[in-house]
View 1 (cartoon, helix red, strand yellow):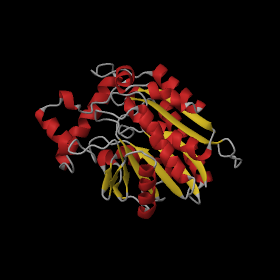
View 2 (spheres, helix red, strand yellow):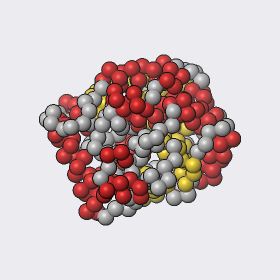
View 3 (cartoon, rainbow, N blue to C red):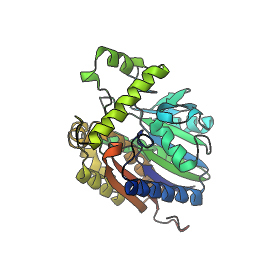
View 4 (tube, rainbow, N blue to C red):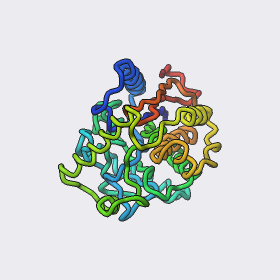
Length: 320
């Protein structure tokens, strides 16, 4: 068993609201570096920690965590629709191991994932079915949220299971960093929004288009400084990246959902996927080192945008 890690922000706005050319060049370069890192590593299995944005998981039954035994993309914001290549038997073994280690996790035989999970697979791996992938949903938008310690313990349980895997494993975390896009919140939802939050699976094309256009319009207004959403929080982003790089993940146990939202936006909770992925690496392989890091606050994407790669310190294959 060997492990490597890539964590990346995602944004539904990548193809809908371009930043200045020099910024887009930076982002493309960061993606290319991570893509080369993965190509050199050549994983046999990808374990993906990702959120959802009320496309696959709803308040009708909202788990904190869920492992997909089978999964498919919903195709929102132009992302790929269709089946992921999920090794079902291995996913079942992982779920049982995580439960045996005391972390309550849901399972799904028909998981549906949106751009939060699909976009990194497309950009970094060339498609949603190019490699076997076990998708792990981490609730990052629907209150109430699991404490950060539980996120860390989820990663630890997954990493402990992966110690016995015979092959190269890529841990993939998708989301964040600071951002506050117009995702409906239950406490302020209109009647129509509440119905969607409860169980808005498979909307009509027209309904999805309206929902997506609202995000695009908000991003354009945010770029002009006119949107009524929270500013990005570069200092908070930098603090998080530094803690993740240090490997001292227990420091994040004290972070509360309320404080995270107040400082970095209501969707900053997506960094939970990064915490789980990093602690999976730490649990399976021990101390690690960050081999590349890109970060920039990008208002056009409504995101503190980052792409990082990491390997265990004992890795000698020259992955950079």
